[in-house]
Picture 1 (cartoon, rainbow, N blue to C red):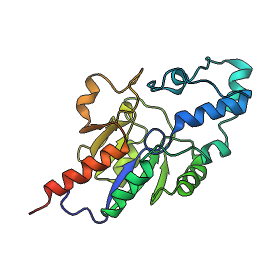
Picture 2 (picture 1 turned 135 degrees about the horizontal axis):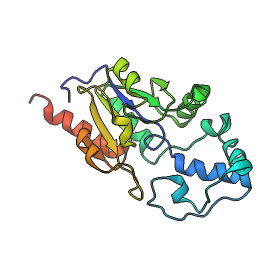
Picture 3 (picture 1 turned 135 degrees about the vertical axis):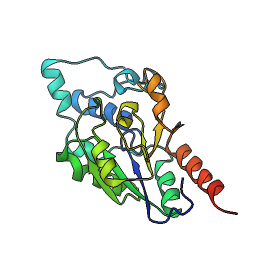
Length: 210
């Protein structure tokens, strides 16, 4: 925590923290195949488990992937309460930067999506890549040196600087990868961004001198 948040940075993931990728996934399915899938498990972490869809291959998989285009990445809805949570943090003096593991080709679409939804995000950084022994976001975090990094995928907290507060957004528990021994390496856990913001700002107030 810090006693003087003015001008300090918090880094935020997009999908699962700011944006409702799971709902957008269902609409991508409808765009590809003409029917909006039914909800199968509202507590499922992964969209393929959340919606009544099947695993695809071959031509049908290619058709589905084609739905994840510029329009898709520009129109993902906000998670309930996320815009308000960001505004709370900005009002308290924090600068917010989105770090997203997205292909560079869609960086502008991601930024436009956040702007249209009213997110007070100062900058968007896309990293691409998959999680390995070190998070694909680690280099961006090292360069940015935020006070906190907030992500909903535990493997993306790997290899981050020790001085950065690692906040894990748990969200849906069904089939979640946010389990196991690696949880010991994050500094705090929260159900969503709104819960993180309230906790972070509350801790800042408690840390402030009387």
